[in-house]
Length: 262
Image (cartoon, rainbow, N blue to C red; front, side):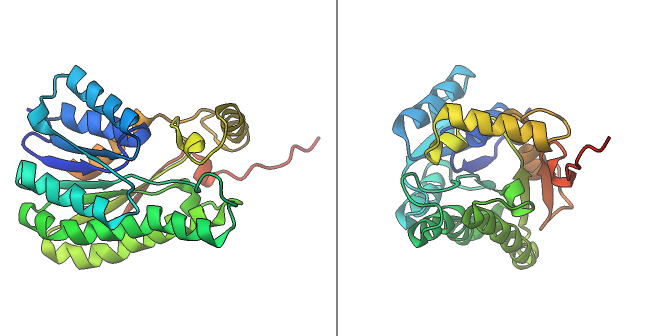
């Protein structure tokens, strides 16, 4: 019996990266999973990997669509309830650093970044709350180290900082209903994050390599599978945690590089 046997989970942004690793781990632990993404090919690959590890069709629901659109959020919750009859865990993982092709500091990018990283989470929390109250379920929001240590991408960092504070506020609202809500703040993780915001893979790889060498005491990038294990912990074992954050950045959240002096 897995830790999530008989449970039902929605994992947004599960067509790649942390979301895909979480869907695979949750299903391995016995959960029925609703997987989501905007890219049909990538979403199909997640479905293929689920089936490859023995997960039957009756434990998989696929919902495709832009997470910033209300219809996608409504479909995620409504179709999950329609197929599985309940909801135990909501993992708000979908996120993006910037909209490809836009000036990072444009107001259009500001709106898009907050719609994807924050407004969609609010929608899904509100839609899911009645169902999570019935199961005494919980929510895990995937934020970022950028919420703690900002960067020249201030809209993304601000959206993630707002997500952290939103989660703390909602913990006070949801606790009386028996619903926990917690946050994971990953650092540099080996995903398609940079490519999805429009950076060439080679350029993004160079950025990550320089960042790791300059600011990560553990001197390596993290993996999506490592983050999935933390999300599983928050969803299952962190039974006396709500409104809390777990930071997983290889120590970069505490590191301030000092100049070398002879």
